[in-house]
Image 1 (tube, rainbow, N blue to C red):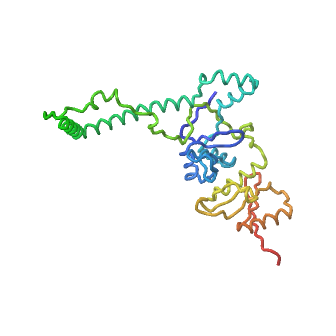
Image 2: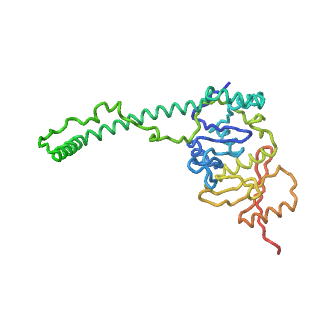
Image 3: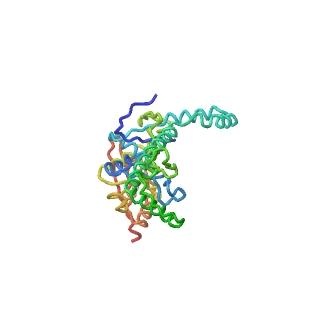
Length: 317
């Protein structure tokens, strides 16, 4: 049974424990109004074979998705239609599944495909009507010139054949007669809108981030709880955060939008009062120095109070 979800809420779709946002407007709102970045992971429609620039969907960190839910801006959902499809594939044997797919091809049309085909049909009718009106206006504006040109050519042919009789100017040109029936608008000339969001034909169900499930396995995890408290604390201070795994940390911390600023800190999260090996501290400090960033050792207690310790490598004295 699908849940009733507020249309103004950002839909974060869960797939195997990962959070995705498919609507371009939602992605813009997440960045501009909530100061969260995420990571675009989809191929661009016009250049699908390159990976230097990516597009929708936007993949969110678990901490980003949970924060949006906590502030009341988003809701976590899972696809019921996809789950039913996976269950059907698990029940069917490989041979029967193959024969069934070939037999039912074209019969069990997906609702997304049916909705898109309907949209294309309506768009074609509308564009044909507009093209027909434009064709009619063009012919009407040029009718006198067309009729005069045809009459002139006919007189020239008559003179060449020795017939001196002059033919009068023609009336309304033939193209305007029965234009509705004779006008041809090929479908190849139709303009097609490339959607920036997935159609909302499928049924979805809300997922509670406080409950552990296959779709949201982070609830109650000690590591996730520490990361989330640190993430939320830095976010409330006005910082932008992204994944810091490439720099050996949990988060990269920016003083503003990453499109305008370089990261100033590398945040590494540790459970509260957990002993940290000296070698790990030295490694983190040297890493931060090499990439010209300050390392933050972060931990949070049971009450959510976050402690930050900054490291900077000064070398041997």
